[in-house]
Length: 214
Ligand SMILES: Nc1ncnc2c1ncn2[C@@H]1O[C@H](COP(=O)(O)OP(=O)(O)OP(=O)(O)O)[C@@H](O)[C@H]1O
Ligand SMILES: Cc1cn([C@H]2C[C@H](O)[C@@H](COP(=O)(O)O)O2)c(=O)[nH]c1=O
Image 1 (cartoon, rainbow, N blue to C red):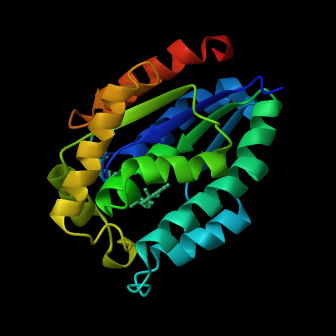
Image 2: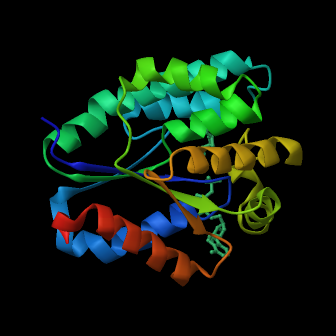
Image 3: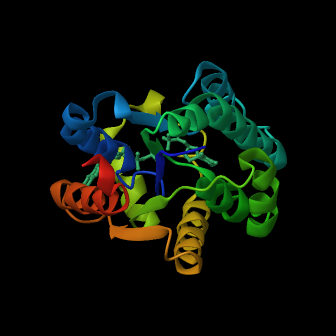
């Protein structure tokens, strides 16, 4: 029985998910202690982090798009089995930086494999496990890319960050379609706002869904 609460953070590159997650963790960790699991995709455990390194390595320019989609799904399956399910079974609040919506947006729309095909392929990996809440950090693609270029060292920019603007525009458009298709699960935040406001709105959504932890 999975009694915990599962919340994912989604958005285009540079939307501010990772910094918001760090700020939220600093605010709620003192209260929640070991009832809180913070994790990310691809990654979250040694096997999935190893797959992440292969996927994001800028040297892997010849990776086939379906190979890429399958590697994300493989990392996800391991993450679910080894990290997410045990945490939910232990009644924890799980906050995850990216999950299956990333595959639909990046591989389905960005790589143009097909959003339905990627969603279907991932039902095998997830066995139908979806977040109770997805906080979608919405920014125009060029805003996210400008942030990344302004703040990251050249060696921190990965294989997907260096994709062309058209790719990132397709990713953002797919996220907006997902949000419109699943408004009860996916809640949109205007992530062009100041960081403190973005964090306050994300935390309010988390508290609404995970009431009993606060
Ligand atoms: N609301 C904001 N306004 C301006 N800059 C921001 C905001 N939020 C985050 N940033 C800055 O933008 C950059 C990207 O933020 P962050 O790494 O949190 O984004 P991300 O969504 O996790 O990106 P990625 O998915 O590419 O890892 C960082 O340098 C961060 O300080
Ligand atoms: C889970 C997932 C991620 N991606 C992409 C999105 C980002 O460009 C990178 C992950 O890096 P981050 O800095 O940790 O956000 O991978 C993807 O294309 N498909 C996925 O399923």
